[in-house]
Length: 509
Image 1 (cartoon, rainbow, N blue to C red):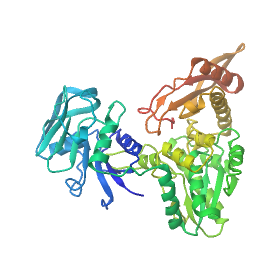
Image 2: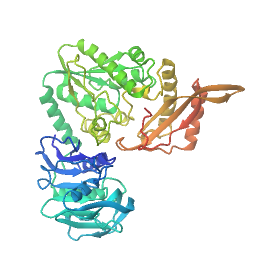
Image 3: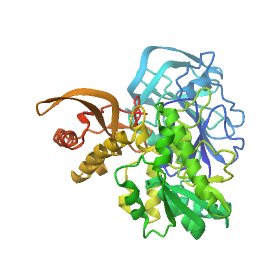
């Protein structure tokens, strides 16, 4: 895989959006924590410094080692990065006299400046900082201003170094993508060769060279990621791929049988394993979200170990890990703290002597879907909503019992089928139901009830990193609520979650 662009993360909530915008230009990029960059920088053709919640004036401010980057590679410093270059290179950064947050418009653009080519004079940009650059660093030249921010953008004479105090990666910066293209394509001359077709060709060749004639076992979930990973591997190694679909007892209603049917005719070697009792036993009495995830991850590993031992000479475990899993599992002092543990990026125990292969670990979800389309996978399967690896366990708040699973499966089926029947399913990124650890008073007929509350959740997103709640029609919500309360015994109240990510996550646990 060509590296092309390195993004150093200082903990900004927008870092992943920088990567998304770069990928939209068909340019491959990778995110690394500022204090743990790749040892070999030779393959990177340009570097971007992210923003940060820190102030450069703080004692615990992140201090990157730019000795192998600055002046040697094209560098774009965003927000914190721009202030860092100024503060430690002869300039001055001070608290801003006004709140520099939200929309602003460029009021000055330096003429004949390649970074700002095809940018209009009043172009809207997004500010998000409490400090501001009062004095430019040594050899700094101002190239753009807003009404309130004189040094909105600058460059360093004698270097291919550019710095901006606004965020080009957010949608509110209307010409942000054009600025990134100007920097990466016109200034840094990074090739735009990261396409689904190129990825498929390169990954199949890489898998052939990596796996060779070894046997690989892969856990299918019925979802987009594991399916695309399986088809990629199948094209690379054929009959040496052994797929296992595990029923963990936490799937959607009738999903075990329907998923097995789904894979018929795809040419994949798939074995179904019903281990639902094993998982429910492992979860008995567990109510902490992280403990649930780890218990499920351990049970998966045990099941795979059992199944792999029934095959001879299996050397590899394949997984459908994608890039958000990798990013969210990085935990360093400063950038991107771990949001949740992912059992598919946490490594394997010593007793399981399998090497890991993850063909999709550098792709975002929308990129996985485009790769799947290139591979000829059915559009209905590729359009399926993401479903969490731990399944309904993290949509049942509190401890897990068979009764709770049964209730949630029924509620979920009514909601998801309703979305499909009303033509709403494809307009939603992800939807599901959550069983709350709350009982509420109700009246059914002439009787007073004290039963469960369920929450419905539907979000729209492009990659799951940020998400907004979907404004489902009131008539639809009313119909679904009535159907759930009338048909699912044990539920007497339905609520709809109108929280966005951030600050809320898509899943409740």
